[in-house]
Image (cartoon, rainbow, N blue to C red; front, top):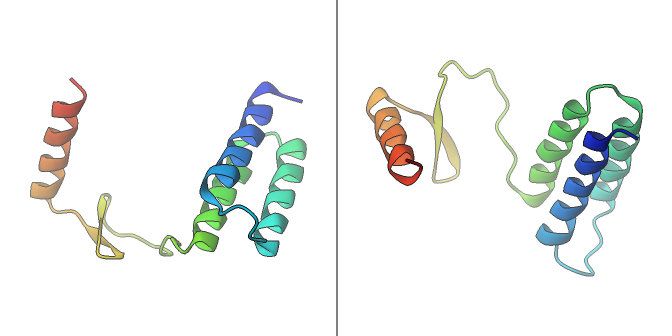
Length: 102
């Protein structure tokens, strides 16, 4: 097994252990988890099944991403919805990022 595939499987396990309540069964998530592990073992590009797992996991947790198409390039999350960022918002975000990561 490829090292990156193995690390991806560890990553998926860590997401499950850290973000799910202990002792509460999630049958639909187990199916997603099982299918993702099979795909990781079979497919050449490990990133595709990994991104699908992340998307589906967020959906099960109640944080589903909206479906596209998205005409704007940049969005921000505001009160439960994605809102297109204006140039002013984008500049402020870049400035804030530069302040925290010199």
